Image (cartoon, rainbow, N blue to C red; front, side, top):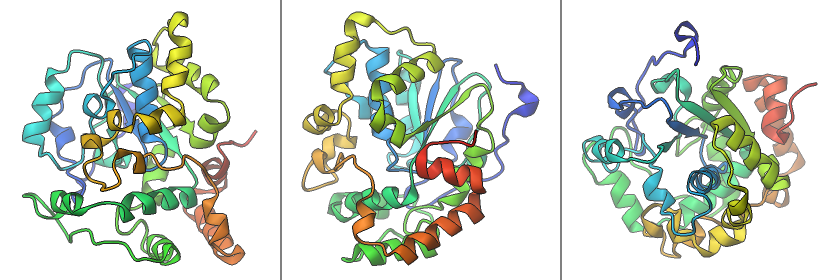
Amino acid sequence: MTEKSALPKKTRELHSHHFDSTIWNDLIFRDDDIIISTYGKSGTTWVQQIIGQLLFDGRSDLEVAEMSPWLDLRVPPKEVKLPIVEEQSHRRFMKTHLPVDALRFSANAKYLYIGRDARDVVWSLYNHHSNANQTWYEALNDTPGLVGPPIEPPPDDIRQYWRDWFERDGYPFWPFWENVRSWWAIRDLPNVNFIHFNHLKHDMPGEIRKIANFLEIPIQESSWEKILEHCSFDWMKKNATKSVPLGGAFWDAGAQVFINKGVNNRWKDTLSQEESAEYEKRAEAELGAECARWLATGEEAD
């Protein structure tokens, strides 16, 4: 249990074409809740799948996207979403893309924060955005409760997409640096655990065992091979309708386009050395050297 005096405080609300942070004000926490947090496109769905597999001993029929809602996504509205979450009888695992100061923090819930180099994030985000269909835009732009400007289709040139995102801090989605900073600042709390996309890629079995240990979920060794299979990229890609929101209805190419490539460094073929150096300088200025190093590699200072 975390001392209440040390708990982060909610200081603001965030509203946008995606966010309605007020839902956290009304959530009734359970002591065993699991909150998965990322900026986005950092391995969120992967970790949701891992937790589902750990909780349900490697079952292949889990509808993880339905079981593990994005709580602060403003559609469906909180009047619809909260009763569904309250009715869940299994150990709840929810995701958020908010910075710490825009959500209520529980002393007893367990928090997993996933990091990934922002250049890899943006390349994955571009795939997500450029393949979205009209249904996706209508859900975000044409439904009650929209605050601020609507989200627009991306440019054809991914370099321009990068420049817009970099120069306007996360545009057209949400600010990046404050998200990472806010979670990094509480990384030493006993109910917060940091995961890095690189580590999941390089040693998924080891990382799954670390996650299970942090969440105090005993692993059924008889289910271990099934857990690993169902958390593999190939299995998740093949069975994407189980882990992608609405089974992939927001993308004309289907759910598989949501789980795209699962690789890093695609930006190296596009960004110049000068552009990469500009990003790295900005990352250190925004986050500090230790956090910037962790975000790029998953490694912390000795």
